[in-house]
Each structure stands twice: as C-alpha cells, then as structure tokens.
Length: 185
Image 1 (cartoon, helix red, strand yellow):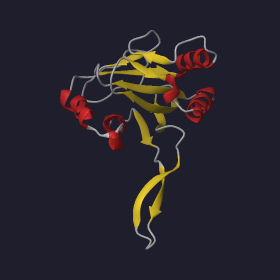
Image 2 (cartoon, rainbow, N blue to C red):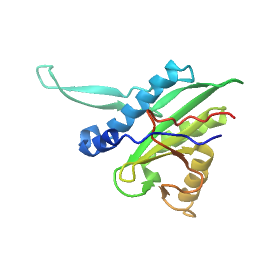
Image 3 (cartoon, helix red, strand yellow):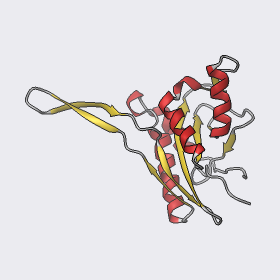
C-alpha cells in the first residue's frame, strides 16, 4: 500500500470552522462525496453514502415540525475498489475532531465497530477516515489497527484515543480531493 496524497485547499478546511452543531461532519462528508465522484469518473471505485433514516415529528395538525434519527446506519460509506486483480469491497466511517490531535475511541459506537469487524472478516477493506481539523490533517485508520486499539481500550490496557500521526495511521494529504484509497504497486 502506498501513501495517500492531497493538495492544500484552505477554503475547504476553513469552511469546517463555520459549521454549527447541526452541520457537524458536513464538510468532511462533502469532501468524501466529492472524492467518491472522482473515483467513479476514473473507474477507480464506486462508493456511496449510506443514508440515515429519519422519523418526522409532526404537530397536532400533521405538519412536520422536525425530525429525529429513526435508525442509525452501520457505517457512513459502502462500495468497492476496482483493483486490476479483483474487486475489493470496502466499508468505512468518517470521524472528526474539531480541536486537538486526539480522536476519542468512545466516539465509535459498538454497532459501527462490529460492522467494520464483520466487513473486514469477509474480505472488505474496512477503516475509519479521521479528520483533525485544527491540524488540517486527515488519516486512514485501517481496521486491523483499529481492532488492536479498540481491544486495548476496552481492556483498559491502552489509550482511549487515537493521536494524529501515530504509527498505524496512514496520512491523507490534500490534493484536488481526498485520495484515501490504497493503490497497488
């Protein structure tokens, strides 16, 4: 597996700081969706955002007043990589931290971890894509490394966070898009 590359685009990175609580994660999601479109155009991969199921909340007259999450999706994105040797399924979740250089493992829900585990065990490339906005850095945390960290955290033999740049993380540099997929050499 080779390194992943990006070009600096400070507009996109600064845009995230303007997000309010309701839109948290939207900038990262938009970056990933743009990347997925480019992957599709270049026939590198086909990746889709898994929609969140919403339950409308209505007033007495039946008018929709708001909505709440009805059913959480297992992970944010599913698809496959079009490798020269095989089609490789993939599943991943996008996570982020606004400030600092640590992403807390408890932010990954048990059902998400289990889905990534099941996916990896059936041959998929499963991972987390983590944005550290203050550092303007992005990393892929492949499932085998996530599994080690998760088990150490759960058994209280390891830290409860993932520090940017630690061994086992693959840095994604900013180019025209988030090039977070592995390339076979």
